Length: 192
Image (cartoon, rainbow, N blue to C red; front, side, top):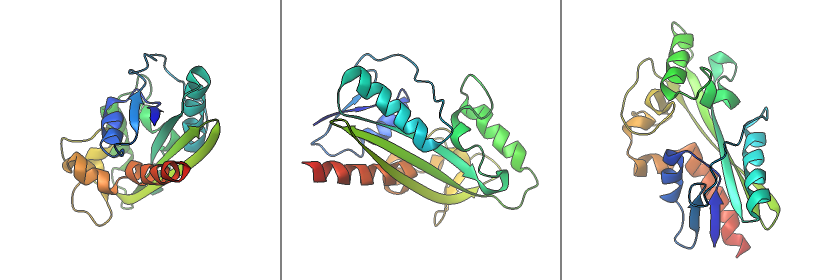
């Protein structure tokens, strides 16, 4: 089965490709020569995932999925949340976003947070939502060189390393994206 992943983020595409079963031929937006930026205008992670998937499905009439993710920090009332990718403003800048979070958490004891991913899958016009959540803690300084986004400051519960200290294989077994993707793959397997 051919399936378009509606993402321009090369890191996400690599992460998802590493988890896909061989029966799925994963196409990225660059594979289908789609270079437009899909503006994320919804107020929820679910809404943005659906918006992106519906945009690609409408334009291509091909089975596809999109994800949206956010880091939700307890002490910041769930921020950055749906605004995680642009938390420090435009243009998107992972380092600026990360530094803004560290600055806002300076002197705050409660550093509990969770990552949430929602995948919106559209197969033959039928829509499915799959959610993955991983709880953890925000540390006070960056650690690790792998991953992207907030990975260098997020330590998942039950782990002693940040996401950025884990290799792709390790991260892929526990990440919020992997959990949502496992649910999506289960739906795809049941459709066949």
